[in-house]
Structures are given as C-alpha cells and as structure tokens.
Image 1 (spheres, rainbow, N blue to C red):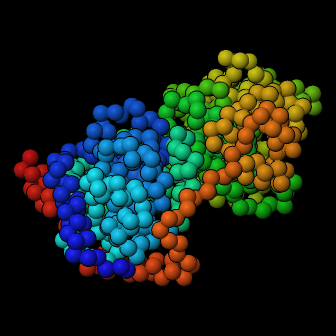
Image 2: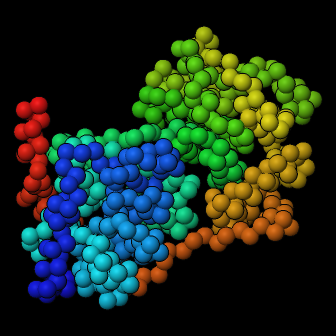
Amino acid sequence: MVSLSRSEIDWARAFSIDELRHSLCWENTDILIVGKGPTLSQHHRFSDSLYRSITLNHACEIVEGTINHFTDLEALIDCSDTLFSSKSVVVMPLYPHINGVPTAAALPQLASRLPILRRLITAGRIYVYEGSNAPSVGGIQKIELRYFSVEAAYQLACYLGAKRVMTLGVDGGSDYAHIISSRARTRRLDNGRSAFDAQFHQLQRLQNRIGVTIEPLMTPLRIFIGATDRELIPFLVLKHSIETRCSQPTRIERLPPVKARFPHLLWRTGTNFSLSRFLIPSAMHFSGKALYLDSDMVVFSDVSELFAYDMSGSHIAVTSQAQGPAEWVRDGRFVPGPQYSLMVIDCKKSNWSIDKILRLLKRRDLKYQELLHEMKIVPRHAINVGLDPEWNSLERYSKGVTKLLHFTNVPSQPWRTRRNQHYDLWLEELISAVQNGAISREDLVNATKIRGIGPHVLSDLKLRGVTVPEPPQNSSNPIHNHHFLQVAYLRVLALIRNTIWRVTQTPKFKNLQSRKLSKKES
C-alpha cells in the first residue's frame, strides 16, 4: 500500500462520513437504500422516500439519491457522466476496490489519474470511510466490507442516524431490474457469489449486531420457468414479455434440473427439467405465492392478475382448456380439462418434497403421466381450475384477448421453424427483447450452435434490419490491472484484515447508545 502524506490524511479526515453525518442531520429518520434489483423499476412509486436515500453503484443512473455509494472504482468510472451532472454526494472507502480487492493507493492519490475523482474532490462532493479490509489511518469511521455493497450501505445508514433502514432494488436472485443499463449488467456478481440471496445472511447478522431494522419497501413477484440450456432464447423472450407488461416488479428464475435417473423414464425428453417445478415451494421457503410457467410461452398481459387471483384455499390454481392444438386433436393427445403448464402455487399449502416424489416414481407408486398431467400429488379438491383460459391459450391467438400464448407443438415452435402460424408474432417479441438489450448476439450465436434455435432466426433478424448488440465488455481500467498473483495476494491480505477486525472490534456508532436509551425512555 502507498503511504498517505500528512495533507492527504488531513483531507480524508476533513471529508470523513463523520462530517457528512453532521451536515445531513438524518438522526432518528428512515433511510432508503436503492439497489439494482427488479423492484428498482417501481422507484416512481416512492418519490417521497427518495428524500433520504443511498443509491448503490449504477442505481444512480436511474435514481438521483442524496448519497451515491460505491465500493468499486470500475462502477464509479461507469457512472462518470451521471455523476458529473449530478449534485448528490459520493461516499466510498478511502481505499476503493479494483477487481474486488482494495487498491494500493487511496482516493486522493488516485485522483491524478481519474477525472471523476478530481471533479468530486474539488467540488467537495466525496466523503470517505475506512474499509475493514484495508489499512487504517486513524480518526475515520471504519465499516466492515465483505461481499456486497448493500452491507456497507446499511452500516453507513446506521451511522448517519437511521432509526429504520428501508430498501428498494435489494431483492435477491441473480438479475437486475430490466431498466438497468447493459453496461451495469457486466458487474453482476463479480464477487463470486452465486446469487444476491447471500447478502441477506450478512445483513441479518449486521442487524442483530447493530439493532436497526432493515426491511424492503416492496417484494417482487416470484416467477419460476422450466427451461433447458437449449431453451434459453424462448426463456429470455418469455421473461422480457413478462417484465415489460407487468405493473409490479418480478423476480424471474430458471429452475435447475432435478438430478434423477430412472430407466423407465429416460425416453422422456426433458424429464429432469419437467420435475423441477416441484422444487418451487421449498425455494420459496414454503410461504407466499409463486407462478410456474413452461418456457415455450409468450405473455401479452399483466401477470400480477394471476397473483391477485383468489385461490379460495386451494393449493394450486390452473386453467381448464376446452380447445387444444389442432395437431394434438388430430392424433388424440389432447384431453380437455386442467393444464398444468401454468400454475399459481400457494407455497405454504404445497409442501411438496422432491425426494418423496422421486421415491414414488422410482418405486412406480406414482406414474410420470399421473404426476405431470394429472397432478396426483395434489388432492383433487385443492386444485382450482378457475383461471381465465386465455392465460394458457394453446396455439390460438386473438389480439387483445389472448393473455398468454403457449407454443405446444414442438416441431413447429417458432424458434425452430417459420412454419408456425404465429411466427411473426413471436419474432416481434424477440426483436423487442434484442433491441432492449435482454438478448445479446452471444446468446443467439450460442443457441444456434447447440440447435436451440434454427438458423432462420438470425437471418430474419438481419432481414428486418435489427442490429444485434455484442455482449458488453467491462470498461477498461485506467488505474492498473492486477496480475493473477497480485489479486490472490490482495484477497488474502483483505481476508486477514477482515478477520482481525471481526475478532478484535465491534463497530462503534456514536449515536447507537443514545438511540437505545431513547427507545427505552419511549
């Protein structure tokens, strides 16, 4: 690490978050943390709450918070144009991160090479704290830095005087709000974690230690889709069709395959993914509602209608179809009645166990047909068939009427061939997803290679004059690029410092004791 001069230390202390606390006067207030998750798309509903807010990284491009918090220099550089035109302040660790580890130089030393830092320092718009994984210069509030920026932002909010911390766009899962820029998406889960759910364990630990409640302003609708890798493009088209029409934020996830090998089921295509829907209640911790969809669908209406549906105590709600696809009717495959390719699930009542289901299948006490097409694991009286049939229209489309179109005939699915009667309809949805950055050239090329889509898809996009964007690249680093061994060394060093911090100290918030006393008095 590069030693700080006396003047640089004086600057850091003069612009520490201690000074920011005094200037903001946020003592004993609600403070909002704004992240990049799906609920960010509903920020317009909470304009009053943005008065005292801390945005995380690229969220400042959507919402102008009072404070813009960054841990990583890369994200700060990405947002330079937004910050140049903003009047809000920036808060960062004195030793910010590059490639996920603290830099060797402090902010005032980096300013000569970064115009955005020079501008912020000159304008007096940047405040600092000491990260627990970097050197200490003393006299500056220390904040524990581990995995996610929301953890630091929560501690910052508490230090600034929050009596309660609210969140928007801090949603878990592995996706961002669809309104976030494609550049911002390149930073997703750079810390090596598999999903943003990991942040909640650390937030709970911090809440237990500090005593300030943290809770979301709203939670996204949970939607699970069964899709193999070869079905990535139809999955992304379906996902985009849901997000752009839904009046509420959504958290949409691909279900993982169920690892099971039964000789009498091996002939069934996609068996492991067909069984994945039974993982949903446990993924929801057996609480709340969830929506299951097959990947071969497109939505034309607001799925929040499905979540608002009164299930009248039933375990699941589905549509009942009187008309089937012409191909199914001709060969006798279609049976009028409930269709389980779309299900609204009450996860508290549906206490399904995938292990128990697999044992029943293995022993042949439960047949595959009975499970997938008759839902025999749910009591008949607990199946509600009252959903509007237009929510699972089988190969039939009527403009302004159909709410969900289901491409059930595999050989003629539009991503496989132009022969589908609704091919142009699906192609328009694909074009919209591509133009909005939801599907990249890499996605399409890879899908073509593994025969997930036919070659006609790329050629038809070209004929329509649609430019398919290349996958965005991380912005170049104007400071330095660590080699592999340097990164490994710095990670170990940061881990050691964090461990020492947790073992030897408890973060001391100067206003914490007075807040506890005031709570007792009240």
